[in-house]
Length: 205
Length: 182
Image (cartoon, rainbow over all chains, first blue to last red; front, side):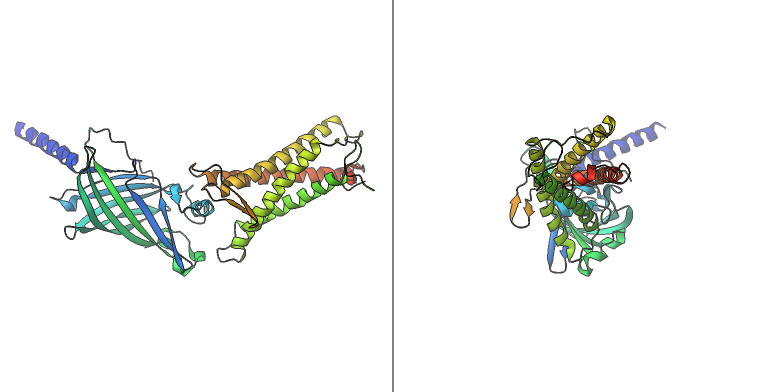
């Protein structure tokens, strides 16, 4: 009995220790993370924009990369294409319907490391009230001690999806604007459980 | 021959012209606004309708300010003595509210268009620079207020028009005709 208890305590200790070592909060506070998107305009050129408000965290450990996890919650109304009238349209009922679906959300389900620098992240992506599996190609950028006594890790994720798959009707924008391309430039700061890490925005489906 | 300025019993030509110009532009802008927000992206009017809406909107705002200043500089024709005091009061409140709403709708339109720093172009003739920017979702808040206050204005305009017609056809007095120069 005592041995069992000891084993449980040890397990709990190592679990909390490993989450201390691997847990990163995405540095949205100091804006070292970006969710950029591109979509074609009339088939002639590209429009780019971003979501200004989001939060999330991830865990990653080189010793056990397949245990990596990512969760991000995006404030849909924070869409910014540098044009007030367009942003208002995009938030409106015709497109993102941000009043009804204020959050978008990604939660990973698996991660497969390909080599030192790349991997494939799979997860559930929720947008416009629709949840679908989404695959994100990940390339690692770097990690290490930052100049301010912290430890950081960063990667870039790219993915694409058809807006219609999420119930967003873009037929009237023309055939070249069906697909949106996302680039996620993510930098996380390593946190401990006891750290004064700010709670990430809760996902409220 | 109608005088340019108001007297205590008559509206002058300038008051009358401003009244009807503002009335037609207000109705036209409302119809244009309701129509244009549902335009298809590939419609030829998609860019052009807002271009007119903004230009006319600024014109209307300028005319309303001019009308208000002109009212300050002029006598106010007295309501007909046959009209009860409480009706005169309600009429006056509606007049003031309509003017305030036109100014408010104009300003919310301006703050919506310029919410991210873009200037408001008036007929590509001149543009009004942005002043208030950097407030999250300002364009949405202003857009909602713009639409809501436009609908309230239309309710008041309806009331105002029905009241004028009632004076003409039911009371058979000169209230409506006075605004036509009688």
